Image (cartoon, rainbow, N blue to C red; front, top):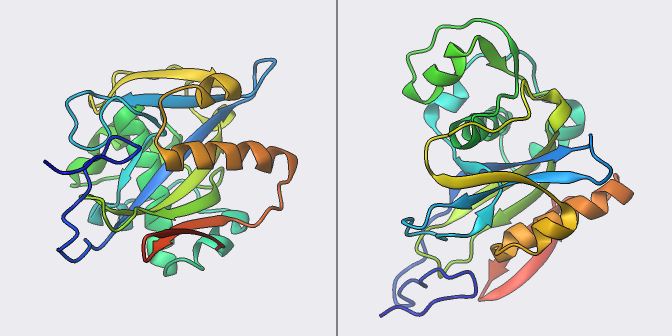
Amino acid sequence: MLPIDADGVALGNAGLPPLRPKDAATVIVIRRDAPRLQVLMGRRAGGHAFMPDKWVFPGGRIHRADYRVAAASELHPEAAEPLVRTCPPAKARALALTAVREMFEETGLILGRPGKAITKSPEWQAFIATGHLPDLAPLRFVARAITPPVRPRRFDARFFTVDAAHLVSLEPGAGCGELDETAWFDWEAAAALDLPAITRAVLAEVAQRELEPGRPIPFHRFDRGQHRLLAV
């Protein structure tokens, strides 16, 4: 039986070469219409092989369709400039679209503006059918993290924030079933949830960025089994 790490994830076979990380995007939705800041969290369904029952931000891996879909707006330079230090511009745009799409798929929340487009992509058909095009301008890039080499699934994830005021609605929908519960939490309550280590680290980082907006964007990676915290 494979050993389990602190996040409840089975570690891979140390005798095999590590998997190449897949590009992914995650979005932290911040709500400011209450006395205390709130953040949207979702609990992964218990049947998942990867981090079951953990509370996470909406997100997932990039799809080829994310490179081709039309958008109502493009990334703000404040987000685009640091993001393109991590990948080519076309991928940077696609990652932002991944964040919008995954949030919609998992929570039903729409970051978009009224608009029409034609798409043959099954990944985007449901979003486009709402009568909206993805709105990238409100997104801000706040962190990058690569899953440790010993994990059976690895991601090169870029984390974005967005103010909930830009959403079409603040009420999460049913989603695709990957998250069995979604809810708004203030920061203290969110930190008390059963969180993966990187989710906890990014949650703390976003809280600190509220006080220091110009902070360097952190890059979490692992070299020879050791966690390294760099700047993007």
